[in-house]
Length: 534
Image (cartoon, rainbow, N blue to C red; front, side):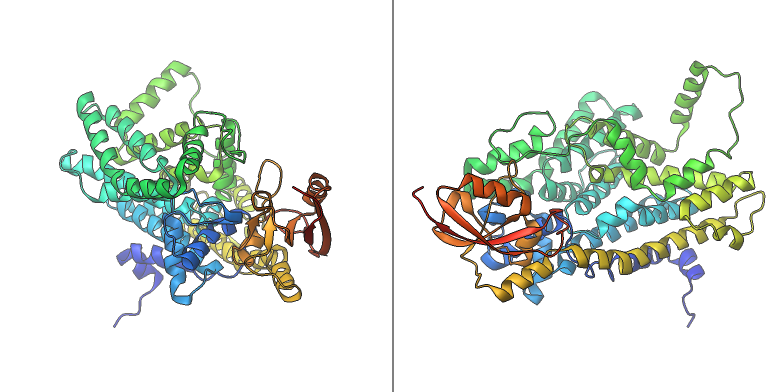
């Protein structure tokens, strides 16, 4: 029997090889670091509540607040955690890691059958080693799962038009888009259908009525599954749930004020923020592509802007259908996320597979075109920040494709070293776990006597501490207990004392010995007792 080698896998089993690379890049590392951001423990706490209460529709989370986000990611976290009986960092990050693996595999499978294979293979390697995608694959958040559902849904929409000319909607399309809605709301179906609609109009193959009917049919059928959850959640949460859902999904997009919710929507940024985060998200490759621009052949002088525009339009019309679809997807996703007031780098992740196709094409172009040796040297130095690499690589007039693969491999190794050594120690030294363990050991706290503030317009929420204390915080302001234990940041402690100076006495018992990463402050643990009438 022939022993599999990398060359054999690349030539005969490329999807298997990519999946193995994906597995190696995330699965061994997702359980090593504590939660050191506010987002991860906030999402993981929902799964904790599901397992403990059995409420899989609208469970209570931080300080008696209901989990208003759609629960697909939390369902998966809870399911993966069920065999061991508790939610850990590994099981809560596993849905994102698996979504990443599936996304990369489908990207290679979809484009690999339609475009130059080496180009697609490099595109997937760029995705695997890009900072934004790698980071999202390692976190307990909903964004990677949403990206996988939407991108694979877009692939299926393309095939629906390409193979069936939009006849007989395949059940996989509403299933994927429905799961996207159940992951983060209506954007899961609105954005893919927006991309697909623009693509159909550019094709100029169908009438406007046909395009409208197809989008309507796909959209309505994709909302069936999510509607079941939304109705069930509304029955539990009532108008409060409905107001938060409207604020989260439409208040952000249309820049509406949201007085009904007790927190700021946050992440307000200008349009240029999207382009800056894309450049940062594709690091370290952004540096490589930037410096390579100094070595490519210049356009011949003498062409006017009008002539260049005409050439661009002609190139667009001659573009391969799959690349036209990718260009439309890239443009529409950037346009769509330029409209809302709230902008975050992870929102743009559905565009990454389509961008990677064009970056891989450019990478092969510069690897097959004459380029000044000094420019390549600058690229590699800037890319890897290791000057000694120039002594290890013989640079000729052309960039050998083997050098490109060697560079990607080195970046991959650096990522693994960062995940396994650097990030693990950073997270362990700055998470709320040690303080939670200390408090549990030294004081008689239980699920009934731990209180915090839950008003993000005034105070900082302690999501990490809440997770490591078992998701047992109660809302001090709404319950007004006579006595108990209280947690808040050092800065907020002074505000709380001033606000309740005539009704409560707060006695500090312990202060965290270090700054806790998810709140970027020290945390004060105190005992309180009611001293006056409320």
